[in-house]
Length: 282
Ligand SMILES: [Fe+2]
Ligand SMILES: [Fe+2]
Image (tube, rainbow, N blue to C red; front, side):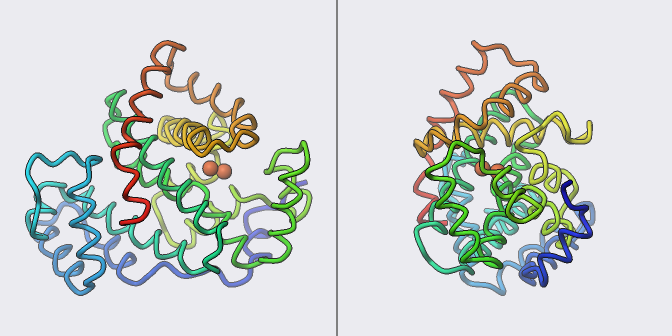
């Protein structure tokens, strides 16, 4: 019997907090006249963050025609909600850096960014109204893994080693060993950060999108497809095989036939090629 959400939180102990700048960014309301100015002032307080926002505004992902050199331009061109997404993304990146800087941390980050880029590229191809949500959802979908690696480092490492030489899928190994899996942990973390429920759903259901609440199902499906393409790109064959069910569910939700899916996949892989430098630059 899997644990309830409350039990998961009890077992995790203290969850890492969301960086302050992100908490403040989330509080700025989108519809006030001064929101862009507030966002700008907040970003300006953090030099590293300002540089990141500019870099991302100039990435192929957000497709600027001319080089953007100032924060004001960046926010104007990106639009408020994308600029806010970028700030949040940069905080998530810093969260990934909290743990020991081993190869696992790097693999997790690369996978998160690859999922973000490919999922939002598929979203764009399908004219999903908010592809930056697929970007953020992808970035945070496996954040539960980084929490587990942080809180239970030795036990979780041992489990990852088992995963490499056993024919079981990772979620059920986690569930057997801990009573919860990275999807449940991710949801618990994002909930404690008061991150929008769509992203909580992406963390919770990316391995089983049909279980997501109906209003978030399309977003979760995009993240699931990004996750699949990212695993293929990383040549993580076992992970990729284990995602067959989730992929099938996602195609069903998005009503995608095989031909359209293959086209989207190609576009997503091209988007990754163009933007993979973000992995190191971000
Ligand atoms: Fe996952
Ligand atoms: Fe994943």
